[in-house]
Image (tube, rainbow, N blue to C red; front, side, top):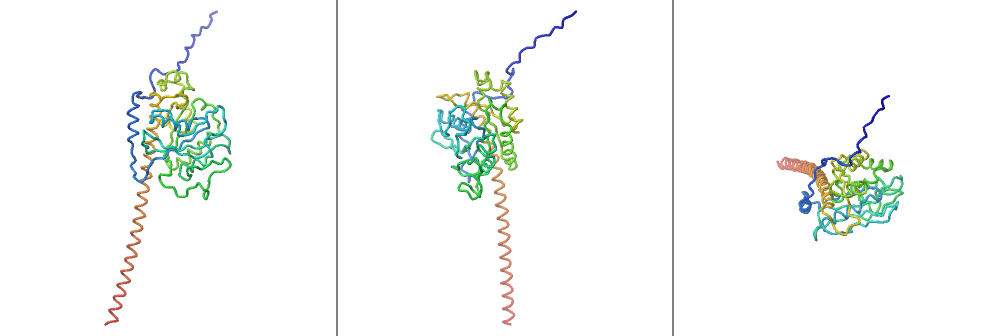
Length: 329
């Protein structure tokens, strides 16, 4: 009797032989200079606003601080962060915007931090509040109310927002080490937000944080991030759950326990920021073109009305003149 022999299955390798996304780890200074020299095409807009949303503990505020760290070349804290482990409530309670500085110069983009999202229907930041914030209806300092969203007539509500009030990109911050366990109700909230703002062509980007906690390979060597099969799987899961394409998903590590900046950490942050800023700027250009076209239409309508009124006045004057001539004769 012949015994069936099975060839032992080789253990799955944790990484690809070649990186599946190209990245130059020596481009830190080039990217930094490019973003420092970035200028807005619309002179009426002082800065591009970018809204940062995400689940509690995903690292929204840390992401904003990490961006500032790169340009200041030191550890900073422009957005307050809660270090309490296991806290189920959002530390950010108010809408707060932070300017990014390079040296003593403010860069032309601003990041707005909001209350963290929770899976419960009436908990954390409400979907309607985030949508209103993207559209520019919510002023800085608004304290989030978990029982009801902001509405017209409230103190911090802006009925007629200008371009500087509006966000031109929404960044979802997602933690790589917990995305597999994300509650479906939270995903539904994100999809509602995505659907509503997509109607106005607002670009969306996913920043996937805590990649070092999700993958041992990356923890030991951050430059292996695009070799890691696990990180690619996490990114694909983000794309499938939220609907953002892979080209707009950026894995990175926030500064957390470090006391000095690191070039590899900086490169991943700068690559994400580069895409975010230029997507937002493209949307601003589109909005500016629409507004210019609308102003032109309004001006043409106004001009047409003026011409009509002048023609009427001339007709009346002609009639009066003709009548006076008849009387005098």
